[in-house]
Length: 402
Image (tube, rainbow, N blue to C red; front, side, top):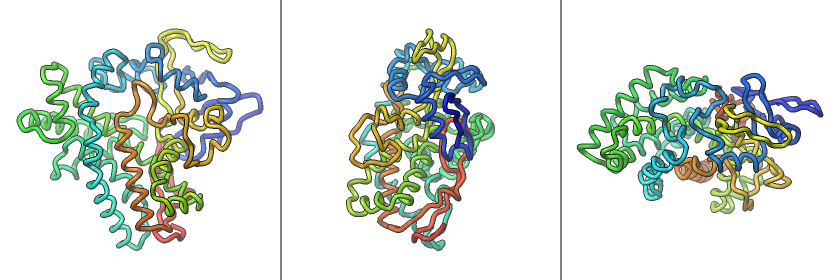
């Protein structure tokens, strides 16, 4: 928890244990310095809901082309200056590429994967039960599940899933340490695998996203590098964010018996519980944009060319938008839209898949272990400055101390 003087607010990047409670810091920024200059790094920070939404609605002013961290060498560090991934594009180029990806990310594919997700979750819960009901739920379920889902979407063959899981773990761990490309061997193996998969799907299409993109991008000279970039983005961004959602949901159901009782009484409330877990936890706490012109707000001016860190997590707890009780789950909450998946042009393509995983995990956990607990105080948080997720989270199936 960050201490603030009555007259000052300061943004301090979080990582590891600091992720346990960054929310007082966010409140101080919203109340006292809503366009804050982080002198260490020379970037700016937006923390109020309306300001964050404004930034996400105006990619012409808040550009993604300079990368999404507060550093000024994102593109070079990632080695993508010549062919930036979707998340580092602005309209109109972003718009055209996203149209192609959206066609490969259909609602039908989200619905179709639900039985496989449910079977996977039940199998993992069986294993926890067989082991006596105690486990690190991140290692046993919350981590393996999104890896399984991403592999399914991308069309990774069953025989290759173990290798894929190893590459995924290495990349996610490197991302947590602040250098997603630090897992050099895993990144190289992954790119090699998908380059071969793309060629196979050209000859033998299947019902997966890579096959869709191969077909839709036929004739595009940059097709292979774009598809590789998309696959890498799914792996780097689709795993730790889902772990963050599931960890928050497990903690909320443990610490708020009334919330658990409501879901046990009416399973139809699981979906709004997932939304409140997303709002309160905000797995991606914030990402940066680069100003293309001076920005003047709240008596301060951030100059063109500077990075602006857009704090989704702070916006999602802004009482100016969500009213009193903003720090508590409310299953009857009707608005405004939370920003856990971003907003506007860069709204997360995988949002429906993440929601599906959250819903099925909560349904199956409550059906199988209605008295389960997680020990949030005994858990640990992963490193990294942008994603808040548990690295370990002790679990007890029958309500005791994990």
